[in-house]
Length: 135
Image (cartoon, rainbow, N blue to C red; front, side, top):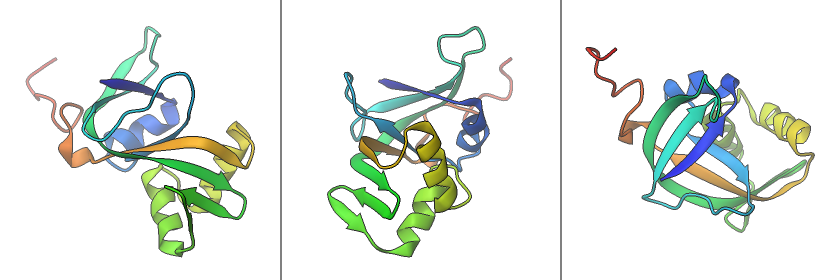
């Protein structure tokens, strides 16, 4: 099991199944690998901590975000549809918004990152799998 914490702005899109990926810096701890359980939270380590979703990791790939594009899994992506899809599954309206968010947070270029992808339809628990009789 690998836990990831999300800013409150991403909680709704995760619960709605719109945000299906996260891009995180590489560091001391390794990221989830395909098949491992992800636990997605907001407010982790606070009194307002809330589990958003438990779901298997579909895949994780190295990724870099540059002013002129994206390197993912060792390949510079040139297909405009890739950029649209990447922005959407990351919870952004478009690729420009995604780039701006990462530029504010980390400064472009954003290198040595991993993209962790999940399929909300495979959820182990979360809003869409919760027991309506539970309180």
